[in-house]
Amino acid sequence: MKTDPISRRDTLRLLGGTALAANAAAVSPGTLWASPQDEQPAEPPDVVADRARRMQWWHEATFGMFIHWGLYSVIGHHEWAMEKEGIPVPDYMRLDKVFKPQPHAARAWAKLAKQAGQKYMVMTTKHHEGFCHWETKLTDYCSPKQGPGRDLVAEFVEAVRGEGLRVGFYYSLMDWHHPDGARCATDDAARQRFVEYTHGLVRELMTNYGKIDVLWYDVDWPLNAEEWRSKEMNEMVFKLQPDIIVNDRNGLPGDFSTPEQEIVAAKAGRGWETCMTMNDSWGYNQNDDAWKSTKTIVRNLAECARGGGNYLLNIGPKPDGSVPEESIRILTETGQWMRRNGESIYAAERCRAGWHPYANFSRKGNTLYIHVHFWPAQTIGTETLPFEHPPVAVAIGGMRTKVTSAKLLASGKPVQFLQDDIAARFAGLPVAAPDQPVTVIEAQCESEPVIDSDYVRINRPRDGV
Image 1 (cartoon, rainbow, N blue to C red):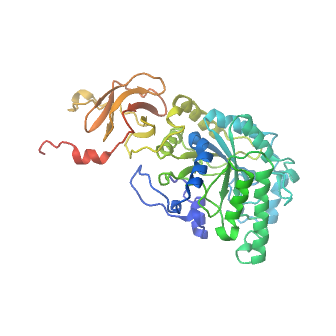
Image 2 (cartoon, rainbow, N blue to C red):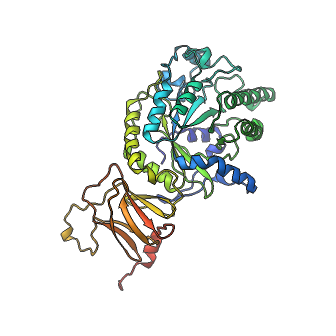
Image 3 (cartoon, rainbow, N blue to C red):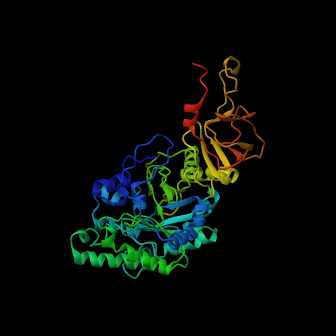
């Protein structure tokens, strides 16, 4: 679901980026497919087992909060303002004096994430602009030594742990501020200096804040994995944080894939997480009013759950750290829905079901969750329609597994059902959708549920027509 016409993925493709520049295959709606960067050599059993151990909580969590916040928030245009508007480095650096967020802004973020049903949070510790949000010994271009006058990463960690959530650090390898950030592509001495600087910053993040759960690299331009010494970098990270999980954006496959602004499931057995904005901007953009509806967010959650993946949903706080009202509203409404229906999202497993015109699916074990986003109530007069089965029912063609019971997930009210070789029909439902913005029907099945629309196409009786 690509919503940003010029996303970071597009920009990096134009710049010659590596892992993020892979083209997604063209497929029919609702189809799950593997990204090209997911192809990797088979790994030893002990490596696979250790990854499964480290990632168990993450698979169960399913829903997380992304936070893009930095000097670009002061401008209020977009997180890429420095480059896209061609702002000179000396001019941009002056923002570090006026960036003075209110104390402990992260506490409100963490409370909002918990209220929304999110289980982990990932904050930009350093974005492409190069400004560090923590107490670093390697540069003065950091929050304790500039306008904020304090360690914003420390405040974030304290807030997240205070709400019982998991802690994630985003770190951009690309750096528009550092004098060697671009020069390193062609100057070997600059590359060695910049890579040492980068490893040093990552080492500080992995050392100074206790247990960290996620390291989220971004943008490996302009070097490749060998030039970044990415293998060495990851080995250092795992030595300092043996339980951490890392993503795939430092030129190595990492523990999970990161489709951006679109929902693209990795191949079976591979962890994946779609990161997405609530409007069209990651950082605070005061003029961006392209807000997604709560229904769209809930549908995206279900789509990620159907493919056994995670959904990392972004907020872009204002320069003072406060969250835009629209983000608060969307996340609050999503949280209300999650309190009633979160069972269908958390710890979901890959579901063997394709596209449906008014529903989506998730599953855990032999339990199928039918997410009805367009309630099929009939308002044109059912008495005039020559159907044996009433169209007001939720009908799932190609249901190849026997259903044993059904109920509305939010209320627990039993749902009647009829099933034959072609479809399962859940009937006796109210005309109006009983839950908003999406109603979930829980169906218990005899075995792992399988929905195969092609079976209907091929095997439906045609009565000699």
